[in-house]
Length: 260
Image (cartoon, rainbow, N blue to C red):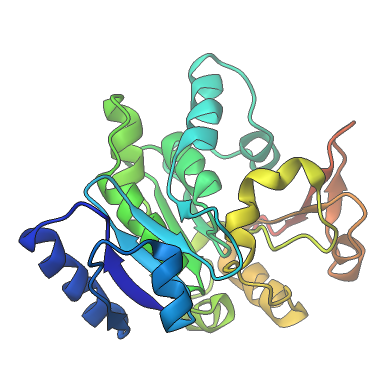
């Protein structure tokens, strides 16, 4: 991985790009009017591009950059504002003031939607093992302005942990969250998910393990939730009760803990 600036830049953004490279312990490469692909051909690596509008992540094998955008979460939040159901919110019976742990942050859509639902008295923590993906989502949640103050506040409240979810789970106190949530990479590809193609190269592919599920059950006061492909073996393997969603390509599995 290396860091460069957008095509049109200045000294301020060059300094910021160098600072980002130092923070991530990677190389800074001056742009010098070269295209991202030209730089990648020379360096032979993935690339983070810091621009005035956003931070972009380019893989070597894709022309499409990944960047943070809250569009999917915004649609879901608007439905909640209109009194409509959101499948994750209804499955988890998520209400204001709850503490939610998202073990597979990814694009941050679930974390942002849930943050809106739990409100300022609640708490949402998201874990992402890919440091570059985590940095992009963290930057987006901190800086993106939607024009809706309540949504912007929901974005700012999401806390992001960069690291392995099992390591983090092991360090947590028993019953420290209301719900622990997993949304791993599906074992089968869903064609409708082509919008996340730029993410596939970077998203963590490590499987959800029995040890992680057991730790989640220790930590969750109410529920452990797994989102997965409707044909996934993980529901039965780990003892999740499946909430079948007619015509949907993915279902939610739930383990009730109900300790309090």
